Image (cartoon, rainbow, N blue to C red; front, side, top):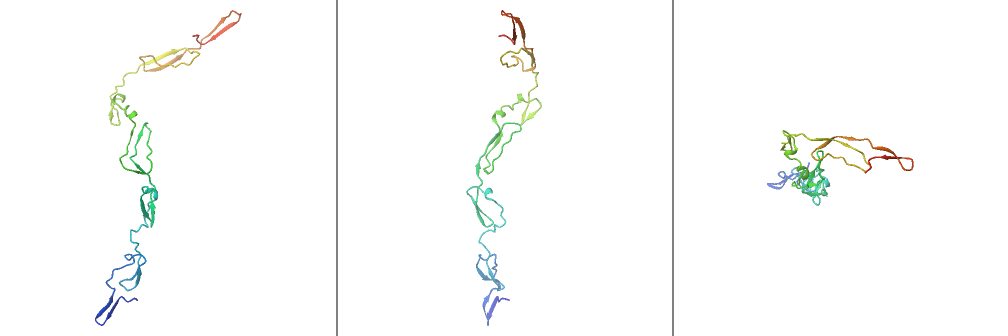
Length: 193
């Protein structure tokens, strides 16, 4: 057992019994004696214990430093600032890039698609993204059309005043046989323009 108090006659020469120093409050590597007189060696590293920290360099802003498990780390997380993006389809999404964002970025429906979300384009009684529809569903005008094939490409569209083609009838390709001056038969396939 260590001596923690020495009295010589009526004079106290040494009294450690009131000391409060402990290994954790004594600077790392420094030696002293505790209140019980036993020698102690300091374990205090002078800062916060980082042994339970879990951050990685990728979670610390690029250029900034921090201590994790007693090791100084330099961050690699990119600073994206104000990141903004748009969505242009119903199933569209915006992939947010990794990194730090300052909170002032936005994601919105593209302006071209926003222009289409108007009351006249939405059925009455239906609300889409806060826009109440007013379209009464007027009757569309359909056209049935008959076309004859030709030897050149054709585009078949509804005539003016019609909204769409409900049916397209394609006539048979014309086929005509005639006698020719040489005594043979001339075959004409398709319309002669």
